[in-house]
Length: 431
Image 1 (cartoon, helix red, strand yellow):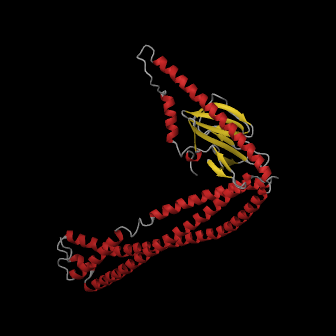
Image 2: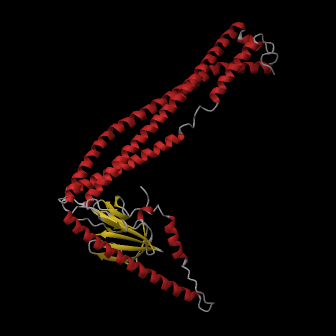
Image 3: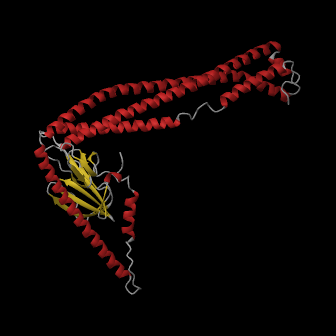
């Protein structure tokens, strides 16, 4: 049924209704760029998390360096920690710069969105003004009461009353929605500007970090010069450490060989018992439990917990050039992790303690079997497990030894697959 039948102002009111519909469609539709910038925000969040981790790591290196500086002797470990801190500071400054670049991109994008919205709002405001003007003129042409009473039926009169009510309410509602949308966008822009200012302040603070970085580098140069003067002492110390490393390697190889032989014999005995009275076979198969353990270990590559609760690697796996002695290279069969005083070494995976032994210069060592894998924890002052113990992931194995010369607590960690050395850093969780 036509609301405007019998009404002399049908054309003007129809135009009025059309304008109201346009405004309603504009406001009810999806907001412009509602998903725009989502990926950039996620990247910013990741960068912020990386920055916080780096700040925590630097705090730890500063603490450890402070402890070392209280000791009488400055060692290669002091130099390694200092090198680590320098790298952390440089990475931190780079991360902050990336954060700032991301924020600037967000601000630029948001400003474009705001300009587009404001332009559309201006158009809608003009349309709204015309709607109000037409409503005003319509009142002059006809009386609302007459408009209702001139209806041809009670049903049409009721619809006209509802129509007049909706027109009156829509002006207020639509204007409020326009105002709210504009205020929301302005608030978002203000918030983004505040973030940019915050990040700028952070960059200013990192200028202080750069100053400290230069201080670290100067200290590094001085420490290198001091250590070079002690070449004879360093060579003697290096020879002792290399001898201890060889002894450790020999012990590990011997124990692994014994363990593999023991496992082979046990498997043979088990197969003999199973095949007693049956057709003989030369195939050997691990028990379901033994087969599952290495499979689980392998599936956790890159996700194993660290052998200490907190710390960082100061000597990685493989061959390295000596930091001060010319033409001298060293080989590390595992990784060396510096940790806090009094820290405990812990198992990186469930398994069985297969050996506890002592190597002069390396202190106590614990070897754990994880199926076809073995992990070794060395430089332990005390050991809290015994051979044959079943250990769980992250279970404490003993207290890390603190070197009285340089005041550092460093655990040496190795990982073997059978008799093949592995790079532990590819297996433990990457911080």
